[in-house]
Image 1 (spheres, rainbow, N blue to C red):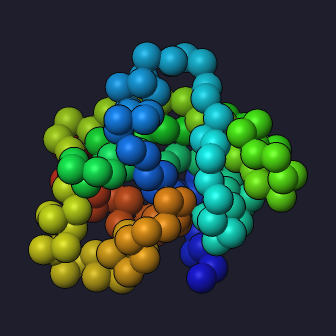
Image 2 (image 1 turned 90 degrees about the horizontal axis):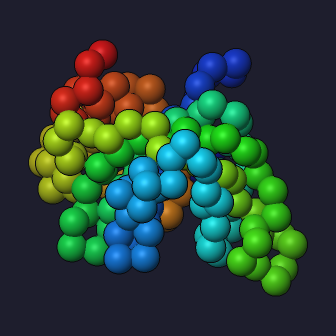
Length: 148
C-alpha cells in the first residue's frame, strides 16, 4: 500500500505502542527531547517510516486493553539505523511529544463510524506504523477534542 499524502506538506501517520512498554505519558516525560521509535520489525512498517519527513505528525496509539489514540508526536529525525537492531535494514525515526488529545479516540469508536472503513488501522490492524489521510486526521482530531 502506498501512502497517500500531499507532497511538500506535513504527512500524517499512526504509531502503535504497548503502553506497558512505552506510553504517551513516557513520551511526554521525555519532552522536549526526542526518542527513537525503535523496535519495528515489519517490512511494510519500516518502509512507511522511511517515508517520514521532519515535522510530520503521528497519532500515538495505545495497544493492549486501551486500544485508543491518545496523543500526537512529531518527527524530529528521519529514518536512520535502529539502535536496537543487529541488522542494518531496520530503521527508526525520532519523535517527540507534540500534543495530548483532550479525549482518547478508541478503536471501538472508529469501527462504529463508517467514515473510517478504509483507514489502515481497521483494514490492517496489526501494522504498527501506518499512514493517515488528511481527512481521517482532521476527523480524529475533532473527535479527540482538538481545535481545527
